[in-house]
Length: 420
Ligand code: UD1
Image (cartoon, rainbow, N blue to C red; front, side, top):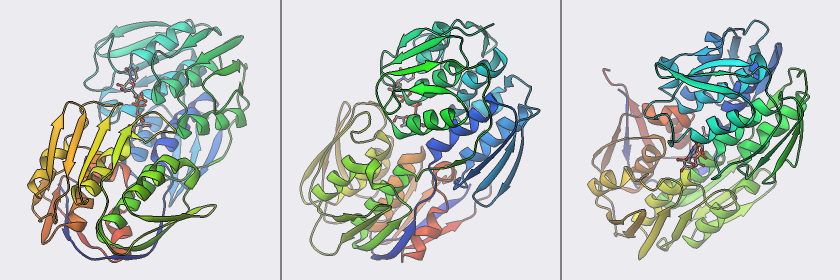
């Protein structure tokens, strides 16, 4: 398994281009199953998760040509309805194909994502939404077997705000007969971009960008092209990288409008942030970082995916920071690894109380998930001496060419190829 080797302390200077958003791309890929034909997606990030979703589409009968950041997708013969365990277990977002398959074929057989059980577990809202639209769901050997002939418009309220459930149910609802009203839909930009794309395909969704969506079902949809929006989580992660190292970096091809809460916290931490229509400039030239209080919440509040990167900033701030995750109460696997670099963190349920230290010291650390991994890379950028972040396959799922982008602006970081 590959690892990243860093030597901390080098200021970052220059420009970093932001890639297309992983979390916006995945539901759009699933949506191509809704209408047979040719699609052209551009600004697609080159990531393992995108390849996993592409492979799933291929299993379902699609043809996909990848050329740089462009995907040409042909779903003319995507007639299969089974999403196998081997793929779904590696990426939770594969579950998105449930709504698209139901919408197109009126039936689907999709493996439950790994670790989830039937019933009151993290895909319950996806399933309840499909049932509200008239789908019959059974569980067969770990697979959700769904059928609905036809899907019928209905009113459904998501008990809690869920990005995945909102996107999944929306993909089924656009083909349901009659009118569907979805209430308490997630406000995250990834749901908005999916809804806009579905309308481009001929769906009739109104209220886009708000909590409640009204959907007039249509009998047919057509293929459409799409440009992937910038990755707001990658953008926020690079803002933290500047804070960890000092220096000045312009993040280009970004969307500052999606990052209001994040920019506010970066400024609280002492970073100088200026924005243009599609760029964010981040500077941290002198002085210590200031402590921050961060509470993750649904959009437009501070995203849970940037909780770990901002904790890296807090580890070297001048004072005590409080970092609370209200979305995933136990998303703190990075804490034990940050200890190894000399961080001082006390956990109080879902609140990390981080007392800034004058310096971190390099050590071997282990990645445990995507955002925890980038937190460790950020800490390594500031740590004295060498830090080896092991198991970077997590990072490769969601950060395009991270080490290349960082080394181009001056970081001392390289990939070491592992045996496994
Ligand atoms: C998406 C993002 C992920 C981000 C998360 C929260 C993708 C591919 N992933 O994940 O990066 O961290 O949003 O912004 O876009 N829940 C249920 N039942 C359900 C579904 C969710 O209880 O059926 C709960 C979850 O446990 C969590 C909360 O709802 O506490 C929000 O999760 P959700 O928005 O669904 O996250 P994902 O869509 O899986």
